[in-house]
Image 1 (cartoon, rainbow, N blue to C red):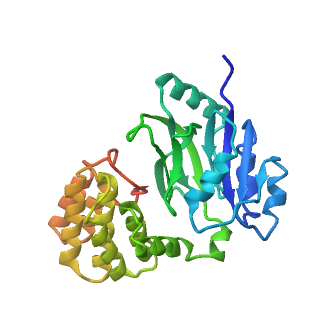
Image 2: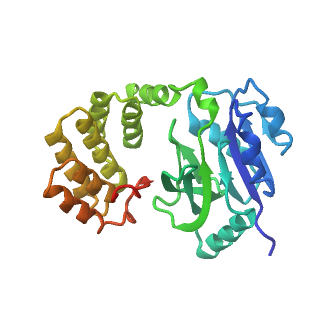
Image 3: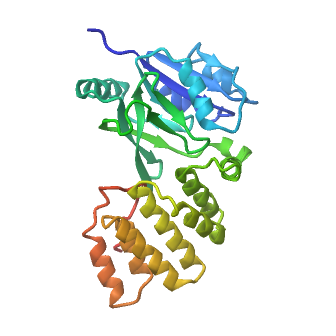
Length: 306
């Protein structure tokens, strides 16, 4: 039986500074498919050094899932690996082939990999490798995600493959893109709870804490999975704390802990928002939590106990 063919699928725009570094790490793939969404620099020329499957026919619609599905439609592999221009596959490509082999033996359609910030400050587990079947598509205008229409909760192989991500200079060309896309989706009444959550995060990044709290409250009307819901409460807690609303901050943090008692970061935050003797007690509780279950973002907590 021959090995499955692996396609790399990418969408890019104005990524001349980062693209070659990303493609060097996946050049052993059987196929690289790149959908350019309107570059005005040398991105297309760089891409063509690695593959003859560079497509410039897609017209950007402020919808990441549509662009990713366009790239996916050009793939011919049995399996697909997703990587962005500001990312690099840290492991050898043979590890990808090994992970796919295990996934096929288990009957899994997805392989989760660890995405790790270059500075090591945060990591997440995402399905970045998947079987190319019609039922698996991208969804969502921003912070898009993969889903299998045939299986609401598909089995996944959890690999130890790592993809490191940085910050592309191209983001500075349209810094409000994600906020714009999510706001338009919300105003049209099309935003899912996930998109409302990420809209709240956009306001958090901008230190507009009142607006962030407003959208966390909207999210809480129909919250998503436990890890995301706990993260929403933690975000609301931090907003109140920055607004010098200590009691509201502690109450929101308690909701984060209630939602996920394994949420180490919430216990640490609670210790930071209290005086002794409560402060040291909350820090002690944090040592019992290991953040292994239902965690959306695993952030570096190494300085919490110093």
